[in-house]
Structure formats: C-alpha cells, structure tokens
Length: 270
Image (cartoon, rainbow, N blue to C red):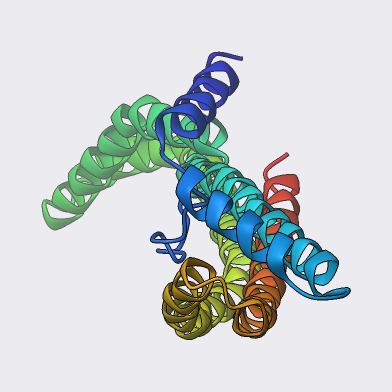
C-alpha cells in the first residue's frame, strides 16, 4: 500500500513539476496585437472573396498552432507517466518473490544448523570405528558400529531434508529469473516505438524551421498589406503545420503503445 502511494505521489510530482516539451516548435511564432492588426487591415483591403479566405486561413493556422501545443502537453504528460511507471516496474522486477526466496533461504540455513551436530557426531563416530578396527578391538568396533547404524538413518533423513530445501530454493530462484526475463522481454517491446518517436521528433525539426521562415514572410506580407502574398504564405504555413500535427499525433499514439506495454508488464508482477 505504501509503495503504491509513493508511486502515485511521484507521478503527480513529475507531471506538475515538469515543464511541457514543445519540441522547439517554431517558438518565434507569436500572434501579437501588432501582427493581428496588420493582418486585419490586409484582409479588409483584399479584393473580392480573398479577404474572407485570408481570415479562414489565419484562423485555421492559429487553431492548428493551439492544437500543436495541446498535443505537446498531452505527449509530455503521458511520457512522464510512462517513464515513472517503467522505473517503478524495473524496481519491482528486483523484488519478485523476494520474501518467498528469503524464507526458503532461512529454512535451508535452519535445517543445516539443526542437522550439523548430528552430522558432526556421525563423522566422529565413524572415525572412532576406524580407530577401533586398527586396534583390532572387535567388541568396541561392534558397539560403535551399532551406534553408527542407528544414526545412519537419521543422517540420511537430515541430508534428504536439506536436499529438498535446497531444491525448493533453486527452483524458486529459477522461477524468479524466468519471471524477470519475461517482464524485461515485454518492456523491450517499447524500444521500437521509442525509436519511432525519436524519428518523428527529428522529422518535425525540418517543417519547424521552414515555418519560422514562412512566418517572417507572412509578417512582411501583412506589413506591406499584400493580400495575395499573405494568402500564399498562410497556405504554406498550413501545409507545414499539418505535417507537424500529423507527426505529433503519431508520437502520442506511440506513447499510448508504450503505456499498453507497461501495463502488460505490470500484469506479470501480480
């Protein structure tokens, strides 16, 4: 119970303390009052239906920019949750059957301690038998052998008890190793998705850079109140923004895949 509470607290701390990651996403793009005013003036001066088209393009672009930041927040939250859960899972792997194995180790050690005096006595008795035979003392040899025969059964039972406990411990450790290997194998399924996320993040950098350039072109166009040029830049900005959104949605889906894998791994710990 305490471990679950600690885990939950750690998740919340990371989620609230960590700043969202926006993939260095065209940070120079800001819809300032000045830019908005210049755009409004350009749209109002545009001939025919161009003005309404400009407004739609601009609104769509602002909407997509907001969507991009929203996706960043969702990705960041899920990623941190996944990282915390993965860390907790790996820690719990080391705790698999720990108490059970510790109990078996104690039982084995207790058995060895219990039977050691018997084994020592049996060994000493056999040495006495050997010495008596060397002295050719048949009476003493017979007496000692009789005692040894009586102890032999107890010694055999003691050794078998130790072997049984050792076998149980060995089997438990083998099972623990098997469980741990299975869970680690499940967790390794995250690696391809992490590689895909890395690839998508890298792929986002190109349209981001192009978007920054197009944004400068857009600001120059609205400042000059050139409606056709403004529409062209907005069209290119929307294309680039759409590419970025597609990649971010893909990244989020990969994080969801990772979340599912972690859940499967945790199910093996129960």
